[in-house]
Structures are given as structure tokens and as C-alpha cells.
Image (cartoon, rainbow, N blue to C red; front, side):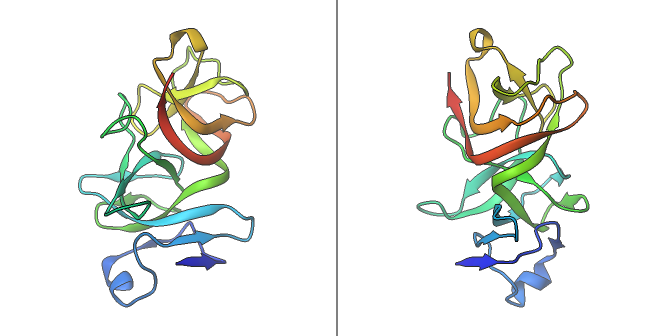
Length: 171
């Protein structure tokens, strides 16, 4: 199902989804054409706006249902894991439901002071869960395909980026 005109910053609880407001795995678009997937926040998670998350499939195909924060070593179960960005207005904890952005301009958590976070550089998982940094081609063993800097970004903040259905990919 596709929904237009969603409110991606909203965080929902189980009672609201049980009342049929929206189903997990539903794709939606905001008024700017950005695309989102409605997901359940997995156990032991506290997600904030800008966190890069892994999308975990609940069945066959692209039916995503659960999200976890992207780990420092890359996404589990490994290469090819779909990623998205948390855009909630408040901290989304375990068993909450959120819209996860998968396409369009966004702000992503940036870390690692040694990185040159510039447009055109490869983007890789950072040393802090849920964050990214830029990397030179010579040092990356894997990178995040479908996620690019659109402006120079400072560490310890969020940086302007563009998402196009990002995935962890071998370099």
C-alpha cells in the first residue's frame, strides 16, 4: 500500500497501529516527494532523528517491518542490507512505530573527526552506531551505496545528504 501526505515525524504506539491507522511495511510519501516505510522499532533501541538504521524484512520481497540502529561494523546480516534514516520528532524506543526515510534529501548523523565529509566521497558506517562518515576510496572495504553528501558536513552534527534506497555494499 502507498500513502500520500504522511506525517513522517510522528511516533506511534501499538494501540494506534492495532486500530488500523497504518500497517507495518506501508510505503508513504510526504508533500516533497520523499519516500518512507512504516516500521516497528526493535527491542533495546532508542532512535533519534538522523540515525541510520537497518531495515529488517518480515517476509519475502521488500516487505520491511522492523528497524535497528546501524552498528559500527556495518549492517547485520551483512552486505546488501537495506538502510534508512530515522526522522522522528522524539526519541523512538522499542515497540514504537516510525516512518523511516529511504528516498530524498535528509540529514544524517555524522561523526569521526578525521573524515573529510565532502560531496563525492564514499560514505561508510562511523565509529558511533547510527552515524556515518566519508572515506577515501583507498581505505574503504565496504561503503553505503545510495547515500551521498550534498554539502560539506561537520562532525558531531547532522549533515545534508541524499538517500536513494541505500544499502551496504562491498568496495
